Length: 261
Image (tube, rainbow, N blue to C red):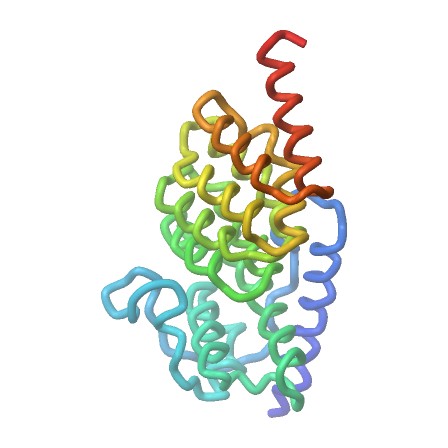
């Protein structure tokens, strides 16, 4: 049977929806993508965090995966399909396209988004939480945003917040940060904001230019009596420029609000 064209068509459709999600102003939701139409069967891989999964985020992925397993994603559960995709991606063995590098990366991203959408509809809350935490570490902002959106719909948990903070602390992606702020505020209102100060100080002080500027412009909802002095010190240390001005403006707005202005 000629499975490759069918799989390629499904992946292409998923990828197009993923880019629309990334560039648009839609709410923080995983894109609604069609299920793969390839046929076949695949063994049940380990779930994230299970006894036979090899360690932390994506650690179990660095194994060669038979092409037949990738071609049979439509018959796998969402968790099985996600494990197959993360393993073949880490091992550079997915072979979904005739190209290499970004072509293959984007194909895998499209299928991961597809399977995350299936997981949101079919998976248990425990599976969803485990995969949200794991895929927050995936090296693509589209997948990270979808994982964050999934996490935001689940009962809040400190380990999920910690996974998000860890992933965001390493990002240079201002678009991902823009999608993350509402989720971080949602968790903050529930008292789950451990690590926020270090995250934002690190990004605004030493992060990439776009990420640092984004934090400086959006820090206001995260300022409080316990951290404002720290951010004032950061503002004094920053070189003159747009980032320093944005942070100083946020600090002034905070102080005015505290004074009833």
